[in-house]
Amino acid sequence: MTGERWRDVAHIGHAELLTQVPEDSLRYFTSLLGLSVVAEEPGSWYLRGYGDYEPYCLKLTAAARPGLGYMALRAWSPEALARRVAWLESAGVPGAWVEPEAGKGPFFAFEDPDGHPVRLYYETTKYVSPADSRPAMKSNHQRYTGTGANVRRLEHVNLMAADVRACRVFWENGFGLRTFEIIRDADGWEDGAWLSSTVQGHEIIYVRDYLGGRGRLHHLAFWVDSREDVLRAADLMNDAGVPIEAGPSRHIPIQGFYLYTREPGGNRIEICSGGYLGFDPDDNPVIWTPPEYAAKPGWGARLPSTFRTYGTPPLGDPSETDTSGWPAP
Image 1 (spheres, rainbow, N blue to C red):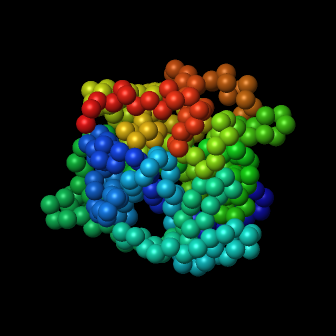
Image 2 (tube, rainbow, N blue to C red):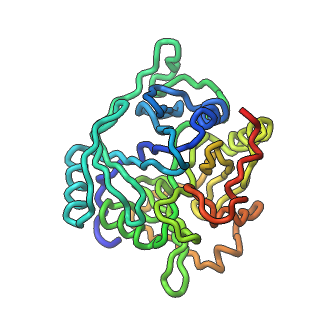
């Protein structure tokens, strides 16, 4: 972007995740990740990390196929929300208002250029812990329980897209998001882009969908406080019989420390920590060429081939969708 970047988007708020085995998925997110259920309705549960100031960061919903239900971002103010809705309407992007749910909203719902459902909102409720889980520190939102991996919050959403550049420009020009890193070839075609509305290195990521899908989810990522917590999560997953797809290791873009598994519904889930923060207001994106990226200048094992092709809803080789490594419920 050139010129002043506005700040109408505050941060990523939550995501809805679809699963065809909701009870098994719920056990994964509560027992292994440590999220807690704060509300439920027929077919859906609302879950929070212990660091969330809002009531929830994940909505888990029963569906015929896994994938992203929608991604929600909070605006800085009612005026900021109105400005972004006005931009969407002026750009000819179809959308509609959606009623509030579980203490957030109303939402303005639309789709990004690849067909991923997105919602914008401002109004929310602040989480107040019950008396038996009040934290000692008044600046915390909930008592530290140490359950499972004890994830603090939703950290980012990674989306697969046919045209990464189009999605990146959509968020830059329409919402003022900053791009931190890009994988771009000599012809200008982009394989990946890492964007954020904050100094955090990524909140929304796009990677190329090599199987030609539309509106697919690559993964949701949840934050823990340290690399040691990521390693502890690997021990928890291993003891629970959950197959580890990749990690623990260090990413090239943003330099975060990661662990990837798939929850029982087949959606890829990352547990992450670390990574850099971008305080320079006029810093330019880091551009990687595909050969530079493939050379893996970081450390740790290479990502498996499934990392480039597998997403939800799944496409391609049925072996990539196999969750038979999961223990029986």
